[in-house]
Length: 92
Figure 1: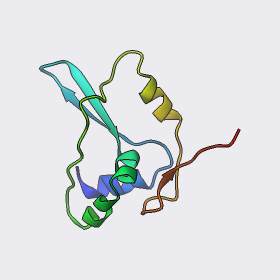
Figure 2: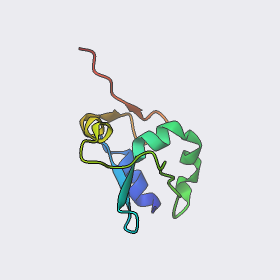
Figure 3: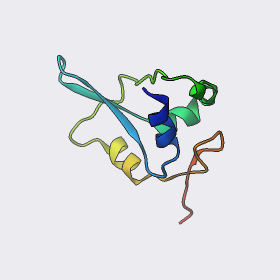
Figure 4: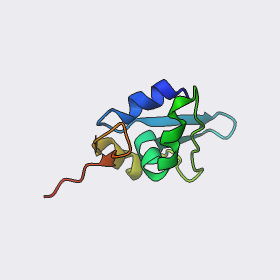
């Protein structure tokens, strides 16, 4: 993935998801870029490259009732695009 797209994604308050389609198996996988960088902080050092490889777990498949993706759509990310990036947790 191009670094300029990743930098844009890391600076947005809404979830920025990468989708990859396997047209042979008819499966779509997804990865939230902000979550990926929160979990893999060492990747911030690679932002001076032109591209970065984003790994998507095969367990993150879309289906018609995907609760994880629905919840992701409601998430807000703050303090990006740097190392202080985190999910905003509202206190209700």
